Length: 209
Image 1 (cartoon, rainbow, N blue to C red):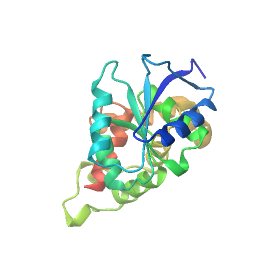
Image 2: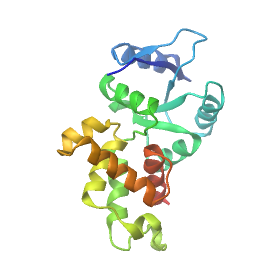
Image 3: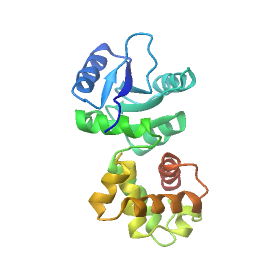
Image 4: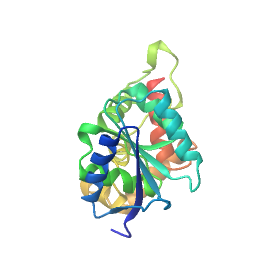
């Protein structure tokens, strides 16, 4: 499991802050930093994703030690997800889905440079990217659409976006860890992406624009 991840909580509502901290205290994989500490991940809890919330998110990302941010929102549609990722969010969760297990998984994913988001958002993207010639609003197909994804790549990318580690993905899909690593590497190289988080963010943008 490794060392627990140091986490801080930011919320514009003290009730949301208290609830998020309570959930995190039930996660042995993380620990709340003391005031003035340096968290590796900040969990930001909001009712909605608007301009004030995105401004706070950007401020967190720009302030040393530049922690990664997991955004927990009361409502989260594809447009919200796109804006949040563009502002620097590493993980996204709807508040009704943010139980201790999922919250800890998203925090761990963010801490290792991965990206977690609700599976239904990625599912929408993958369905659209896999349809021959599919493109939003009749636009020309982008590079993601043109190249397509194999069933294996779709399965792996879904689980990456859901915050699963390489060993978990391998076990769930009955692949070797080396195969999972190779699949992710192939996706990032094909589309000239930096890492797994960039792959998920790029896929989201390609499917929603």
